[in-house]
Image 1 (tube, rainbow, N blue to C red):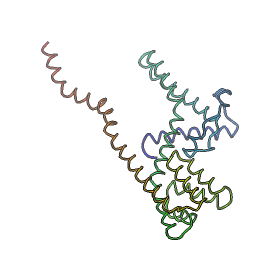
Image 2: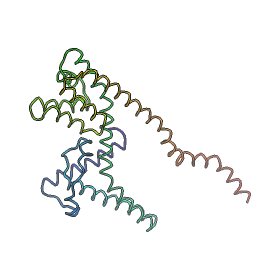
Image 3: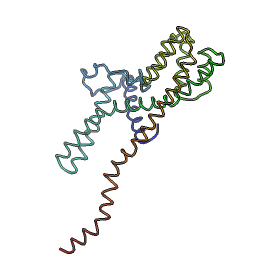
Image 4: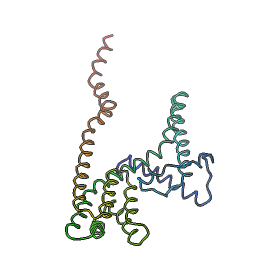
Length: 262
């Protein structure tokens, strides 16, 4: 992960993982009430973030409570340096931000994993389709990709292939698990098409090539949308930081002259 925002994501998730390790060791003081710790957590965002089974539901609530208390205390202390009202407002904002920090971090990581996967999806489909055109089976074509490419998607399919080769899971279940580990409807649709083609013996190479074109086009469209949104995002720092400084630089001498005249 790159960037300050991604570094913050890693730190928040690492904090939750460290709490989980401490809770398993036995020497752990819970702050979240028992009624809250018994509530189930939606596992789908954690699975999409590649963190399935890494943190228990009780630890998720514990991490959210601790982050809320920590950021609330920091906001209160900083706000009290200005006034009591500012301290109360900053403290409440810190509590809300801390409570939402862990779901935000998990969602951000899931989004980054999906973007990384979709960047390599068309490549994977092209390689497997090329193997099928050369007379290889689907398993051999997939093995051709995972053995020659080093990407997050290649590692995911390599683990899945190892599961059905060793008999730990059926091929459809292993492929569906790969699709569920990313928040991508496109990958889910492609996996279902692969399973259907393997089951009924339809032409898989043509389907994979069509899916590769769709994945490549979809990735290009999303990047174009991100580039188009960049000027809009730049308006915020421009309006808040650059524009006031420029106005002060241009109008400052005029205001000083007017003040001197009075």
